[in-house]
Length: 345
Ligand code: ADP
Ligand code: MG
Image 1 (spheres, rainbow, N blue to C red):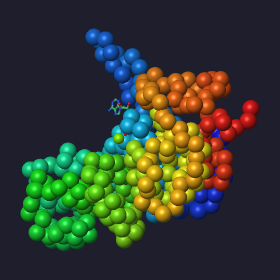
Image 2 (spheres, helix red, strand yellow; image 1 turned 135 degrees about the horizontal axis):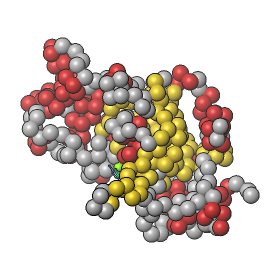
Image 3 (cartoon, rainbow, N blue to C red; image 1 turned 60 degrees about the vertical axis):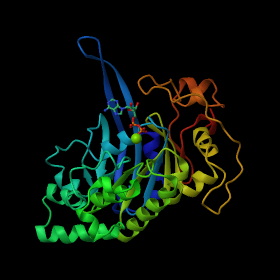
């Protein structure tokens, strides 16, 4: 058993029985081959997800935050088996789905849905709202025509659209309303788990809060479990119970919302927090922490730095960071961090 597994096992979050865990991810990896030369041979690998372990408890929202290119969408797609894992496991609702065939995975499919970032690209413009929202039921072979119509009209009201909208087409709607259509498509099959992949990133700031609130209300009403992906810590603050910070395919910190926003440990998390505007929707004043300005760009996941992959941008990096990969350890109760600053040697 690795240190992280030991830590995860002894974690208090897992005082909750196994029955409370909906999704368990164990040492998950996804490498994309890089092809080159005239023979198109594999000349390298993009390590998009590089050994991630965590579980999601029924009914909670786990936020996953990181810069563009850190592997968040790939992680989400592998969990849903829209992509096959390179290594590691995904257990969904007590079934290890990591290497099941697409046929064998069908019973789980309807329970796991995704809402994408771009409500323009993800909706077929030739289909009416009614057809778009009914489609997942048809694909899954669920319900009779009569019950499908009933289900569609119920969900369309729940997401805040009108029955009269069913005859309309996506181009007749604003971005926010279009995202409501995407949410209706995800929820019409009655899933247990929804991955929200930057669902408000493409929307006007003024609309973002409305859609976030809607998603939060629907979660409560329908008993949903969310993995909520964002590139910025301010978006997930409102909706998350716990937050994981991802950097170059790995989790560098994982903690309750309160601990993460008030007592961030990893220099990368603190840099992300430093970049949030001071004016915040929440009343709680942020604890004064030293501001860290993030320098340079994300290194390529095809050629990540040795040791701690954040060291090239970390103001506190020292020699150990070059030679040794920091493990994600539980430094405080339920507060995990992967950083040599916190482990004596
Ligand atoms: P994020 O969602 O955090 O922006 P992604 O998961 O989209 O990150 O991408 C992580 C890394 O994997 C990036 O370097 C990206 O270019 C690469 N990547 C994503 N999908 C593919 C793919 N299908 N083939 C090759 N590389 C990919
Ligand atoms: Mg993404």
